[in-house]
Length: 325
Image (cartoon, rainbow, N blue to C red; front, side, top):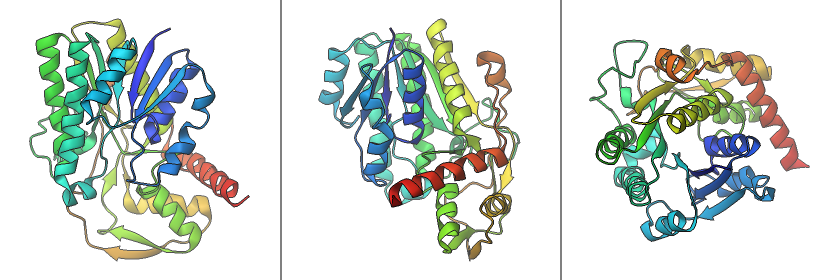
């Protein structure tokens, strides 16, 4: 049985990945610090079923704590690392850039250094579509320059791509960097737009509408992201001398106005819009060229936006009823 260390495995994407790995007969070690960026009880709920599985180990701690992480590496035989833990969010990174640098860059370097020391040669790491900044060429390709990030968060993710390449070059660590494009679905963080808007519209609250509604995102359903992450992991497990960056998106764009309209249609309510200016750090659009991921790892997203929103709202309503009763 292969053992996968997953950092951030109690979060939105991480908990879904742990679901998938456990169902496919992997042993999972989840390192998560349950910080208060959003309500930690949400993440506790995400892992509640995992704790019943004998192949699941939860270690509570911070990737910035090198002795803690080294104890993890020295105690367990680890076959691969999937590094998802990070301080997330464009706007909060502008308010506290030093924290983002500390967690996202230094924390990632701790893992790479421990991979080197303990000769763990397989490393999958979450990057972000935000590294493209306001890229004028669409769709965004992995070969496009990413020298013009417009938020501290994006710059930390680019830094992780660069330092991971250094460890690949110097120490033959096989690396897959995954540029996620606006992931949504069940368990999505409550601060993210689809979750936040759904809640506000259900409660009759005003929805913050930044700009004129023309900004566009390549929304990617969680099942497709997990499929792509697992296929990237399998690719580096089966191959050597690998350093690859993969866009994981749906390769279709939805405007802010269209997103709100889709949620309105699913909920059967009319949003109360609160018009606000564009926010610093927000890009105009994201749009993934996924041809490389299709060719190399067989990535093939299946969930159209309307179907994904329907699934999300079904989950949201079920969770709300569970809390009430």
